[in-house]
Image (cartoon, rainbow, N blue to C red; front, side):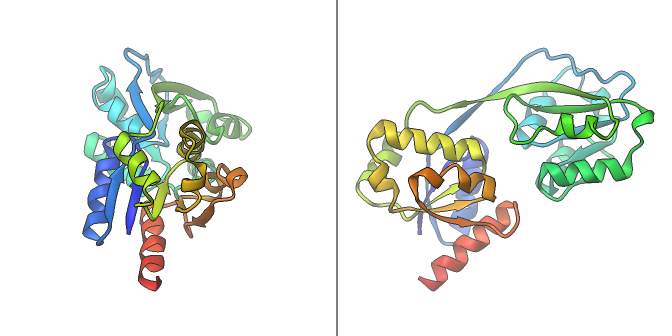
Length: 241
């Protein structure tokens, strides 16, 4: 299959390589540009743990002046991929959630005592779930620190747009609601909604798929919100076609 990859870099290239190893051809169209926000004070004094819900946060933290202080604290990561990245950048005490923020809240509530100190949530500017409010409702003090922003692309890359218009794409992968929303906006901007409807949209979660609902695209949702499950679904469809 020929598949449009929409993740920000460097994850787009990594996903393209994974697809190639599985016998697919990737066309890169990163729809979000990640920009690190410099010199953000992390607010770690007195904190009992750090929370991370994105690998982009960990990339931003890797060059931060306060990273060594952060690394000494326990870390709660949203899923296995973020947990592995956290250990690679320097965290030693890492607990992985089940790949969604709601589940991470339940994990933290079961593991930590609100009286033991604040939690520091290192994040991007835009969140799909208000983790801070959910934890505050359970009695925790949460300091949210924004380390990066993801800026939507203003247009599809020329090669990707040409492939779309010439009907040389079979599918597109979306790993976040914002990426799906950006894709829908750019199709409208380029006058390519009709061509876009030919694609099968492979979505990380139902929340991602809902962003495409107004366009009535063909949507497939992974069994669980993990990249491996998205790719497994794509592989199964490819094998049966």
